[in-house]
Length: 162
Image (tube, rainbow, N blue to C red; front, side):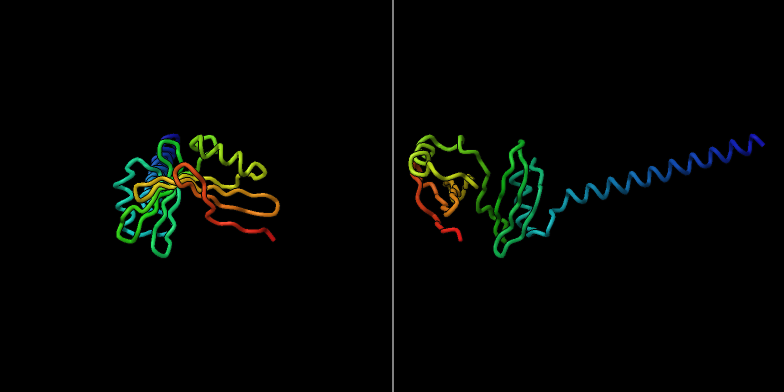
């Protein structure tokens, strides 16, 4: 009787190991494929170019626009966004920054001309060989978006809140 119980016990253990191994294999394949393909679609040429340009990047999100694909990704613990056209050409890269990362001259102009505003968005834009900064400033009554032109800010957009 004990031999039969031992054989039954051994059969159950072996069966459990096979099920556990099969489950682990399926999970590994499923997780690997979810990282291998970008979420929300995306252009194949853009994806190939992105993978070539940013080999060590971890894609967080992919968005397909009308004439571009946007990849939000993490590289060296920095979150960035890269924009590619349908042909896989890199159009621009953006990254959110803090105000203390602005060039000193731009920061001083903000403090002088927009002291009563708070910052709701600030990012660096790199494209066409140039880098610009865009900042959204707000008060209770208005919102203004400024763009850097090198050493100064210019009004890019202005709205009165309703």
